[in-house]
Image: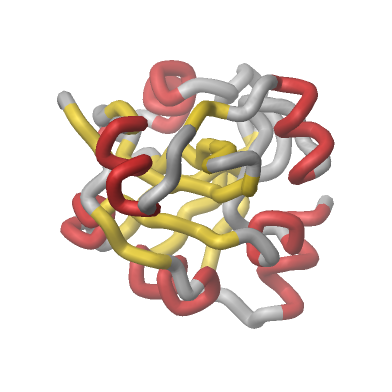
Amino acid sequence: MKVKEFIKMRKLRAEVLEFRESVESVSKASKASGMPPDTIIKTLIVLADDRPYAVLLLGNYRLSLKKLRKFLGVKTVRLAKPDEVGEIVGLKPGEVSPLIDSIAKLSVIVDEKVLKKDMVLVGGGSIHHLVKISVKELISVLKPIIADVSEGS
């Protein structure tokens, strides 16, 4: 599994959790893990003027394409289509983890609200895995841009 290798190679303090049921969405991950949606990080792949970015935000918020477009200073921003996600990161939507090399090579944006959390769950590279990791560790390994790119709750 790419995620376990990524964690091991970087000596991250993170725990890979396996579930019998699917954890491919925030609601399913919350139900299976018993953790509230605001502790589950979703990793979205977006295209800003056709350049791919990974955007991480709390599970109980939505990505604001308007805020992201304004922040990046680009003309167009859209969510990547499922086949584009596969081409960019080598995983299907619902499997995407920020803890893989193909994400680490992208420009990563973390919504500022994520910084208010201590421990979070992120995608684990399959629809049956999540990774428990501290936000501090996540920020340290990804070296992201921090921005206000979410809305709602």
